[in-house]
Length: 59
Image (cartoon, rainbow, N blue to C red; front, side, top):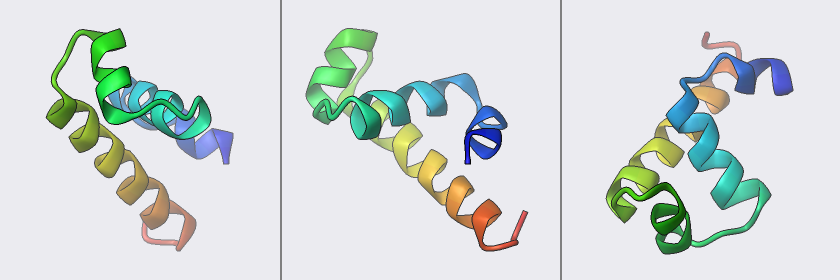
């Protein structure tokens, strides 16, 4: 799994780490990164979609 995560863009990895692994809210992650909540959410969704695709053999 970490191999797949390592292939993601840095922004997606960071968003995923903060919101999923560290359990921060989108707002808290956005404040820490000094970006908008929407940017964190977008990066998180892209990361999850990419991981899902890789794990189901789609990439």
